Image (cartoon, rainbow, N blue to C red; front, top):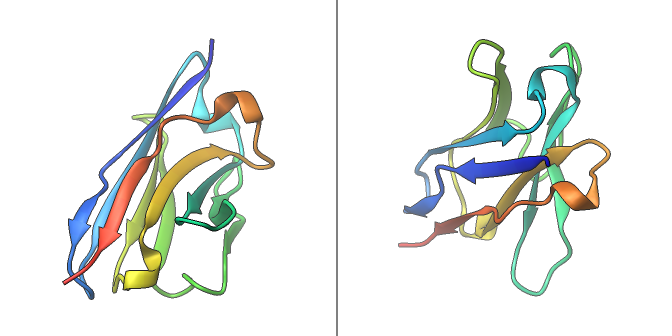
Length: 116
């Protein structure tokens, strides 16, 4: 059974940074195109960043481009999302999943709250 686990969220002031991590059991992330998604209260879940299986193709949504950076650690089989210059509108639960996502892979997510 595949399980994705997100970590690294928390409360941060505007302008601050966080790094999210995505780990998996039951599957190796190294061979999958992966993405970070987020869902804010009252809004639909959206893809904010993705990375191809080889790492050469990266996508960012307009709302995070230039502030968020997705990467892989092949040795550790992790996928990261470095979030800089955080804004209150980045407040959401952040999830990792494949791209396109698989419904059965959704984990609990990690809460990111940007507030002073």
